[in-house]
Amino acid sequence: VTGKVSLTVNGSRFEKDVDTRTTLLDLLREHMHLNGTKKGCDQGQCGACTVIVDGRRINSCLSLAIMHEGAQVTTIEGLGQPGKLHPMQAAFIKHDGYQCGYCTPGQICSAVAALDEVKQGIPSHVSGDLTAQPMLSLDELRERMSGNICRCGAYSNIVDAINEVAG
Ligand code: FES
Image (cartoon, rainbow, N blue to C red; front, side, top):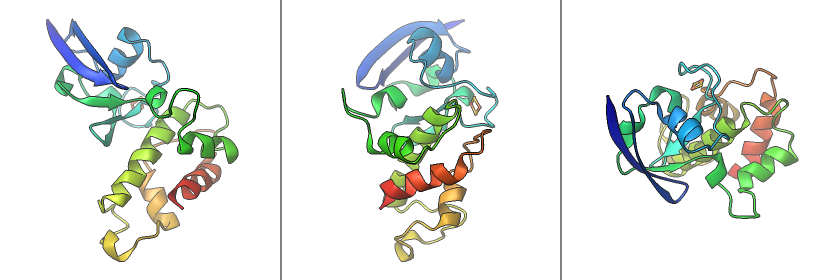
């Protein structure tokens, strides 16, 4: 069975009839050739496939593309400006926030959205009332990034990078 997918990815409209079982991850990689978004587990466990949909991060492997009618999707390819890295990308490079790099696009998309969540006062399990906690504690940051696994174990550098952007 096919269905129409109609959404905006990194500012460009995309419309296509696809198999209704196509995940957003496979749409991005296989149909749009945006291979920056990675497939790790394909089961919602590793976070490598994290993208930002209408301002919130999701595991794109767990979400059917047809569910996102009219959505605004941002992938790692769409975060920066032409010729200019997003501050989070630059901070990951500065702090060596990676080793093999496979999880990095998902880590960066997740980190960007996580800081937006903090700005919006959306609490995590650790934070409680964010209005009383304007600074991002280490526990808070770890909790917010806990859905993104790095098998190389570059966590301390990842945290340093995000902390720099958080200010
Ligand atoms: Fe989606 Fe692992 S590939 S969470």
